[in-house]
Length: 402
Image (cartoon, rainbow, N blue to C red; front, side, top):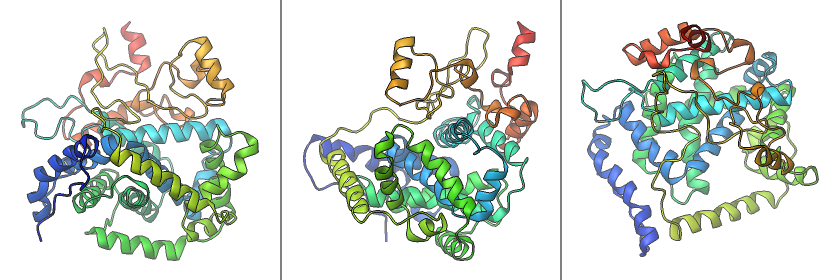
């Protein structure tokens, strides 16, 4: 059966415009979907429809909860505790920020280093995805992570965004989008040396179900890691409302995950309140709001402009954690106001890298100045061609050059 191009039955400018980009991308790739010949780069373009335009915030939280769900696996939670990266609020905030930047970079920046449809001889001048993947691989090599734990995490990234869109979004994912997510994340998995990726999405779902049946069991490490992360996510919430919002958070977990994390049952009203609130938001988005004309992501989507020394500049995310990692100074009054409002627990300072980040430095503080050259070699191998010199400079090299 040919793939149907969904349109919204409502009339009106907002409803019609909301479906225009959706219809265009589905018409563009209808034949490739039928033939199951979508390339990873094309799959990324399809995926970006929801991630960067239609439902960016929902997609972001779906991936955050996908990572959160991995903490219900004792082998994963024990390793996270052993790394000591969840032993203090500062370290939890840094790890969350770094993870968010790396994943957002893979999703927003071109897999091949140039736009989809570019000529074969077009310059590969945007290596951000390859550098971010190489840095992730380099950091992971420092720890003993099983292939099954990698594969489980990858599988949640394949399926959770679609689950969340169907449950809370202003529209569900189409068959093309579900297929594109599988193609895209399978390629990310291969670039991260994940083995035994199931050959179809259905096989992957079956594998995840069996893995959870065997390995998702209660453990104190699950509870501890989940609590550290919940504290980070709910930092802006005043203490007197914390229990209420923790109940809402718990209500968004499936029962097996909740039990494995040793969390108390959510209040009976919590799931209904979440559903009603997000349902209202979805209704307003679908029927009353105009679509985004520009992509919205945690990282800058467009290629950064080279600085006066013809080098790639340090970059900033578009949102920050409780500790303002990689946040530029916004003025003393504004920075202190955000602390007063509990949006951050401190003002931007050099120790929080207020000058911005370089992808090859991302990760635990003790690794910031290590592995840069190796990461660039790994990135070149992933990309299939050398990384342009503008992206290779480290702080040490820049100091020598100056």
